[in-house]
Length: 311
Image (cartoon, rainbow, N blue to C red; front, side, top):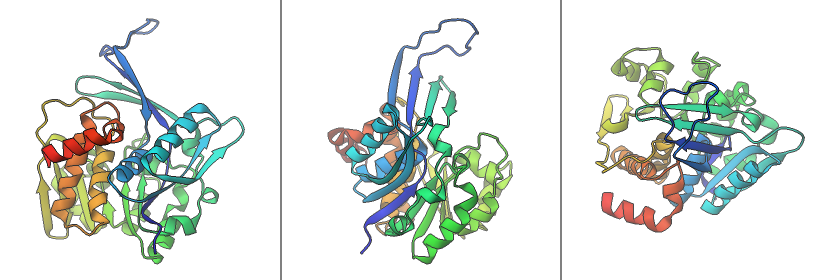
């Protein structure tokens, strides 16, 4: 029997979100934000947290520093029901990473101090633990710098144990979109990029061409289209699911990761693609209804009411 529905190895840190800042940040000025939120961040951890909130058994492997940020982040996952028994607390001077997000009306700045984000290495991973699952998910490929060169070996071993594999690369801070990714994609069963990432990964300036190229490498490609919903392509099979109509978007931080959690929560239960897409869009919509990527999922009464009303 598998211990988990999904295992994840990746980064674990907090997000500090500052709202209401001016569009232009002049130097040597004390600028005031209208409000702030310190919340669980990191794509890997947001997916893990929200998957567990949706009823999946999730095992999570990562590294944090011996500081309060690491304690808070780990506790947030534990409170959601994520197994954090293989999260390593590193000694020394290395600190838990932190992302500062400055949202504007139509765009945002994302500033990350990596800290322990770069520290996760193969020696921190228990392969028996990760393999005791039906599915393995990898987020933030370009931030996994201590693990990146070993990802092909990791995925091959997990696939040999019968796991299916999904990946959301997220953004590349260097904007090169290389780092061995072409060796990794053929080992992935589900690729979950947004529109921009799909075109960057495939090196195409047209989404349709990008999807066609990616489906030659990955059996199932699921592209998140924001307000246009999402599309899933498996060979010649194609499904589109419209986004939910919301009165207001409070905060788009973590919406894509929440979509991943919703989609995968149905996928590991054997649902068809249409149902997976619907749950992905529903989870993404729930996420944007409150600040941060996990706050709407933490409130179980609110979460269940939202799903009843919007499903």
